Length: 189
Image (cartoon, rainbow, N blue to C red; front, side):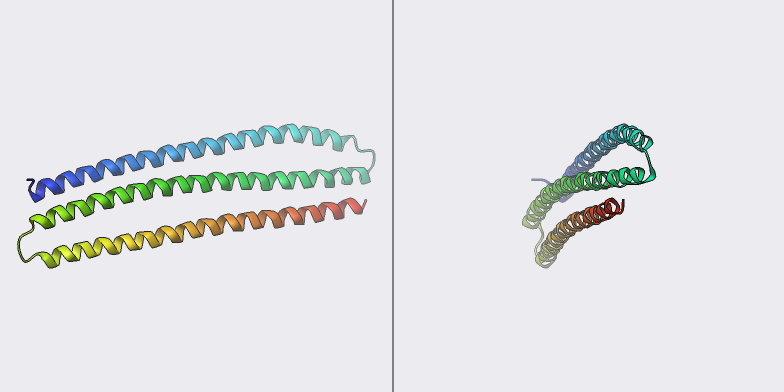
């Protein structure tokens, strides 16, 4: 049978190892996300340079100001749509990273909670007489902490869903406004 100090020491060591593993997982996911953002930015920059060269050539070939402004208006809509697509893609990367962080944290918290409950149960079996109230208080505190975490987790998920909904709504409104402005500019020629 282990003494209280040995049990607590083993639990502390196990918890520290789990926290190191969690931080390693977070760091790995963060680097994966950074790689995705860098890749996205490189692709956007490359495509943008190519399109800019083509667009400049088209504008330079305009025969009169009306044709120049018509070409400018025609180029505005695809540019706005690409900017919104970029924003959606970037938001998608952020959202998936957040989901992976949440998943890793939830798994870690569940495992840590399981270990703490097991430790409290083991200690309560060996607790001296008269400490039942203290053990019950610790168990109650663990239950309250779990309830608080579950509520925080639900609230965070709702906030992320609301953020994604707002981003998509803003993107749709921006695209629609851009389309209206482009069609107005095209009819003014």
